[in-house]
Length: 404
Image 1: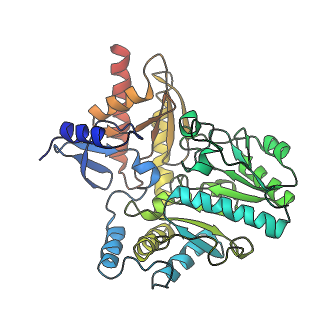
Image 2: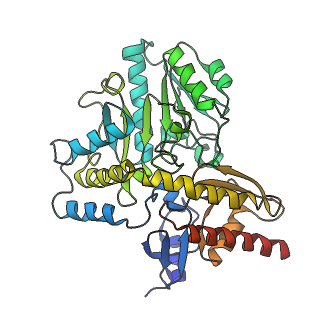
């Protein structure tokens, strides 16, 4: 078998360098554990940025995919197929929304929500043509398409990709007053992550989402919640907005909706919002394909049991209690909710990438962001013993870095 070093060398020479992966080549995975090409096992504490909430190869999801693979994988939306109705109805029930517009990737779903909000603004709210604006947050991450990076404040994602798409107003995250000041008669939507994942698992102040909801309702503005990373069980609730009992006008979903098997995303909204889209105005050949719908149905059925939400709550308590013990011992701050945490490393001790590499050597996979932060988001199926073991490896890694 080709070694990890050889495969990494080929990858680096023959692929664009749009990622900076850790030096591990994964060959196989089950549950919360992955194995590299040399046979070394690692505890996956990233979960594909929440795409693998249900773990690698969950039996129910794999069975649904395998059964569908043998029958029908693609029709395009030129025709109906027998999985589409069940997927849309199931996801509509899960979100409490009338209608579903399925796509593939998270970025596609965000783009869809932007288009829907603008069209709604012109046709329902009465905004003058080409004058609609959408309020977005500093340090947001919604994808890397041209329109989305136009309102990114991350220089790596934004710079040198212009000219940029107009129509967005950027305000500080966590401040409802900042949104209020940015609103005008042409504001059609507020696009917000209930928890900012890529920014370092930033949790807004208590009551923020409630204030945003009230502000949007009072101003005739759509509240769009990007729950691509935060939704579908990760925070201990079905949606992160549920913590404050907030229901947005539009849910943007992805990642875990595909069960770690296929890319599946969707926009969920009521008929008075999604009903403004008509044939030919938006679409995707693969969006809502039979395989994606079959996998999505399996994911929805798992969430309907409530088991994963409860498990994320319970294990999240263990995760955060253990991580908080590291504050002052190489860690400066811990943030998050449920089975999701952003851990700030003391900058004088190490960078986030150095800590990620130290954990890699100890058999734990995490990922750094914004210099000194690492993110922890193990699959919800992780055992409590394995979770504690993973945090112990972080403790040991920090101790070793202090001693070097």
